[in-house]
Length: 349
Image (tube, rainbow, N blue to C red):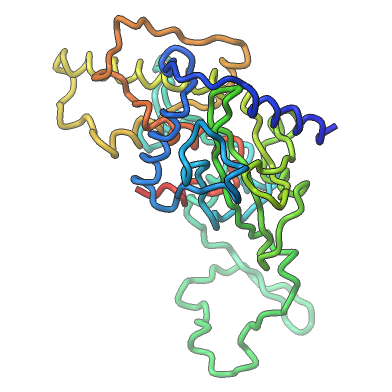
């Protein structure tokens, strides 16, 4: 069934007439030319990304230039699986983040932040624990607090036998993985499409079915397929996030970013904020993207609740996110699908 699905998708993209009419603001879709512009921007701003070419001229698509058939980034770390332990001790806690800090507004405040559901435990300060000792006779001693100064330093130990050595365990059992990420253009859906190829800690290719361990359940069960990457001749199976909802989610994210920008500009005009407080350039883009509510946008897309923006209210000077910045937002969307994969590693500013 998966093979049939993959074949249908390939034929759709191969034989669908390519549209060159821009509907970026109206639909969240982009043209091949806009995909190239967005790819050039991504490669320029984040050099871990680069353009790639097909293995042979026969595998190239005519709507994209040679040498710019797809985008690729390699050795992206992924340290933990998306199981019940992924979020650590904070797995049952959620934090609303606004402007980089935990949002502590009142009940009536607008919740414009993004929802952080995991990984909080690692940011909390470690607490000194009470220790109870047992003597040779089995008697339990009184509780005592171990101070940092009393903990022996491994560097002060001269005995070679005291050094913890590598047990030589098979790295296959290690939780550490790396991924190569590919972004291609889908003419049928007129959006980018993400492919993932994983590797074990020892460098061996990750079995395709194991890649689903790093994909959020809702997507893993519905929109992720195992397919051959169409630009490679050796038919390497990869996990791919199906782009059927990409345009609607991107449309919602872009509209919300524009609405936030207009609100901020209204406050500036009203004198409620200093113009120096409004970030610009790359810093401003990262700030805008960091506050996008991806989860809410996905839910709105599922219900077809697109947030229409009046064209009269927006021109090229007022949009929060330009079309050449499209892939930066797209990767934030994909990071919500694969939160264990450190997408920020590829996008250090």
